[in-house]
Amino acid sequence: MKLSGSQLVWIIVTEVCAIIGIRISPAIVISQQDTWLSILVGGVIGAALTFLVVHLSILHPNQTLTQFSQSLLGKWLGRMIVLPYLVAWYLFCAGLLREFPGFLQPVLIDRTPLWIMILLLLSLMISLTYSSGITGIGRCCEIIGPVIIFVLIVSFILNVGNADWHQLLPVFSDTGWVNILKGSLGPAFWFPGPFTLLVIIAFMQNPRKALSKSLLGVGLTVFMVFIATLMVLMVFGPNLSAHLRFSYFMYVRTIDILNFIQSVDVFFMFIWIFGVTAQLSLYLFVVSYEMANWFNVKDWRKMIWFSASAIFIIAMLIPNETAFTSYDKFWTSVIFPVCGIALPLILWIISVVKKKTVKI
Image (cartoon, rainbow, N blue to C red; front, side, top):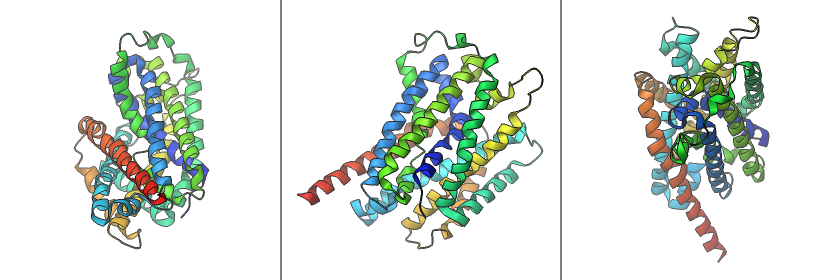
């Protein structure tokens, strides 16, 4: 299984689906009309985190997180380091799998039971992951990614008439740097993809391009989320946007050109389903592949069935939408600082020290 540079870029860009879908409103609650500044600050932090994890992966060519952590720290300690990541990937995939159908159900197909929608999405994930692995997911993102970017640009253009730049005022004075920084943390950790680069860089055809391609993907993602945040704020204002769980999708529903172009949200949802499916498939692959490495299972595809079952059970155990508030706080305050900063930094320092020791 191999990934090209362009496939890596578009895999990262598909993160736009989740970030625009579920991360804008929580940031607006904190940063209000200055959320666009939070997105820019978050983009800088996200680029720095991307640099860290990609550079760590490049130091261990053709090895995923589970493999190089064991080579650095030994069999048992290396496995212990990976455990928080496995838990995080299961929780993230289950959370997104629960949240996205939970949004589609009342908007498009309100009579369909939630568990059926989750099961259908899970079936698509299993099919794509089992049949072609990371290569097929990369090709899928290579097709879907440009379409998502095009759809976003069209949505921005069609709603220019409803935008009011006065909604962005006053800049900074009402919010302050503390809240701007707090609002940036959520998006910052999502921009590089929650820790998946620690695994998928190992499949790059040309690892030398991994850093430049990863930063390009993050940069494009940050730019699109930045514009989407501006448009949501200018159309709804900070007060209303903060109370909308899925503010961007509500933004799309306001598109109305001369009473002719209306109800385009159904088309946008259709495109988003493909993007979210590709993203969920990526996390299913990552957690299945790393579970196989953790248990020394040669055929990683055997772990798909266990991982998919666990993800389905966790998703069904999430009671309702209000649970996602605690879920988001747990990610921002615990999982991201540990798995996104602390552990990669420790592994990077050990890797650099060991390489210097070998040279001496």
